[in-house]
Length: 92
Image 1 (cartoon, rainbow, N blue to C red):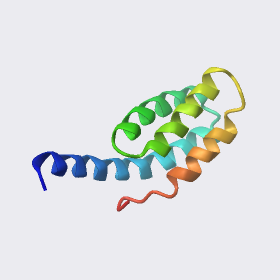
Image 2 (tube, rainbow, N blue to C red):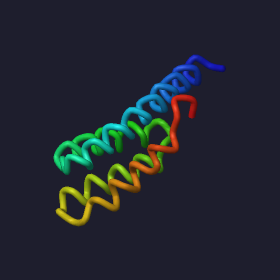
Image 3 (cartoon, one colour):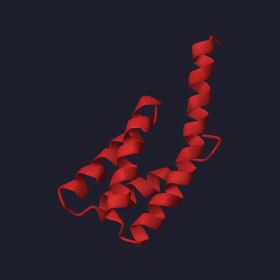
């Protein structure tokens, strides 16, 4: 394994652990109806997830952010993202 491959593997491992934390955070934000908090978190998540190989998470996070900013029904997008994040474990 090259040094770059090792670094990417370490970053992906950290991302997997973060996705577990994001799952709980988005559940809490949705329960609180904290749209601003969800938009900020979704924006950050969309960027990092897309760069580190979790494109599905990145795409849903971006869709959630857009739904919140356009004031469309964001709950379905939030629930989809929460469900997807729930499939990740620290070992993923």
